[in-house]
Length: 193
Image (cartoon, rainbow, N blue to C red; front, side, top):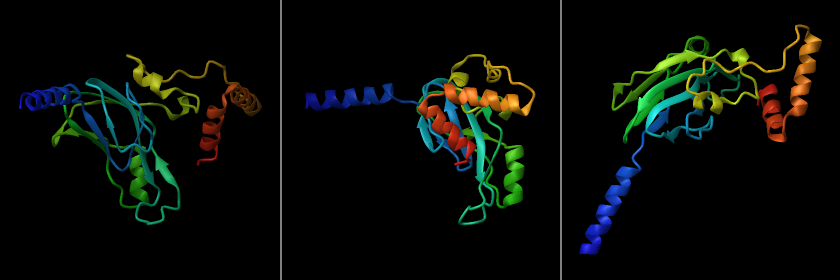
């Protein structure tokens, strides 16, 4: 009897020690990176550490959401940095609107409205847009969210020449310096796969 009581008490204490916020990600939201947490663009839920949260998110929807095939591609927004505080055993929901047709999907991608809720109540958060042109395949999004005061990803250290030939040359140099996994990610991005 004492063993059972001791075991039950130990499990209860362990359960409280591991209580952490749980983020549920809405249908048209992609989380690209999160502070101190590993996420994938396919993640629909993730455990967060207690405290300050910072993540890079974007609106991501089929161009024609009314279609079963979704064969006309996807429409996405600029990436945004969202910051909020979460602690304890909270269930947090990050969501945005659900477009009904192609026109709505394109409008929502231009100006997405994200909501963060916990227990049915709105959670205050800060949001800041990142310039899509300042993010390349080689940008470390995890480093951005783990920095304390990152305003925006720093542009490439290699100066970009103004001529198209110079830009192509710079792109070729960056590609040749990349490792195999970066090259693969770049090709997927370039071919829109």
